[in-house]
Image 1 (tube, rainbow, N blue to C red):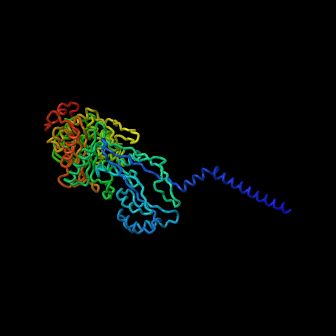
Image 2 (spheres, one colour; image 1 turned 180 degrees about the vertical axis):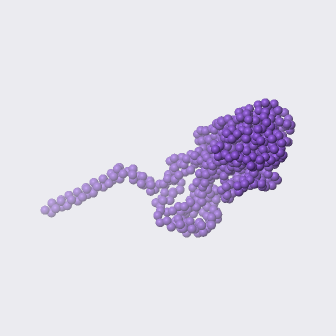
Image 3 (tube, rainbow, N blue to C red; image 1 turned 60 degrees about the vertical axis):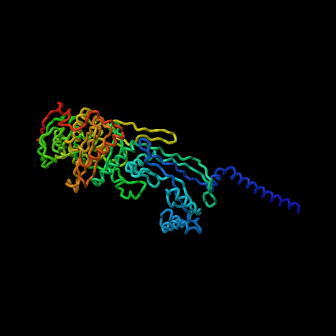
Length: 595
């Protein structure tokens, strides 16, 4: 009986052990086979982590590869206050000294991070720290302080071309200018690195492997020529020093291709120095975002349309009313008491009355179509952020005075870039090219290249009309014209001055003007078109021929030398009377019908 009892007990024990072993085997099977992948991932998640590795943002260069925007290696400093232990006071003291952050601010930030009851809280103390400063801090071997390698955007030429280049935010994203326009190309593709960590979640040093490599952003090459940009900015600042305007602008392009060669403005900023960026208005590229009444520089456009429609020829005569003329009960004045003058002299002397009468001869429909063909009232399509279209009212919104004021650049708002586009069309025998600032985009790792091909936008006027107008525009820069100071020795310069009254509190000011000059050289085969404007010059004159024309001459002379443009073979000097085309032009020989 006793023996049977023992056998039963043994059987029960063996059964229990067998069941336990079977259960253990099932559990082992589940762990080792059924849930193997799941548990491996859990283990990896506990003892490994992923870190994003950044590549370099693409460079921005001029046409010839001169660096305009690049990157500097830097480090972000991060802190995990719960690991500071007894070093907290020293950490605050050292970081305050090296980073220029007040000790109270650091202590407050660390206390907030330390107050998190969940997992250890790591905070970014400062981004974009230079390598030397980071190494100074790292030398203390503080627990809870670590660094992440990265890049900081840098503009090696300082304020040069700042308003065109734009800048990036703290996360490296383009927020203005070319940085914003081409951000999708410039931005790098991030990589992925896996690293091991201890049971507290802290990274183990030198234990990482890259699963996906980071790729640098593409490089952007502009149509800008840095040496020309330097010339333009230097001469523009000389004009600012002499005439002390509120603002000043200069923009240059190749009329045959539409490529922008230089673009400058005052005031500007230096994206390396955030102190110069306190005023957000300085960030704007005013050459394309800010309109002004152009005044007499618009007369070339009016004359181009009148010649193109066959309304006038250069010898057509108009009575300039001895300097004062009433139209629609408003008196229009000239600076001098001119009598009867041919069209070429109206352009040369910049007669408001004469050009207003030319506009009336054209009629509203033709004048409207002319200004639209030259691009006014529409953006140029250059593609840069925040481009304005200016203000040019549709034909059904004109009043009785419009036909006499629009031809002389009053009542319309244009941007310097729109003026550039119009004068490029005149200089290019009436063909308007699409303005562009991007030359090519190059992927640094593959060499793949996207190239901008010059595109014809439309024809503004017939080639013979442009040629005829250019003969008159040459006379503007002679001794008898309004801009002899725009002349360049050895070259024929064609252009037009502007001295536009600003509208202040709804009326034209008698003390605030925009002085401008728009021109090109050599006149018959232009290497470039250049627009100069000074907003409210306060010293040493305010006329376009006094303020802007000399700056045009200085820039043109230096640029022609840089481009190695040969001077004219025949002597260039004073031209007496009208241009040859004016004296022989038989296309239209009329006397104004305007009373």
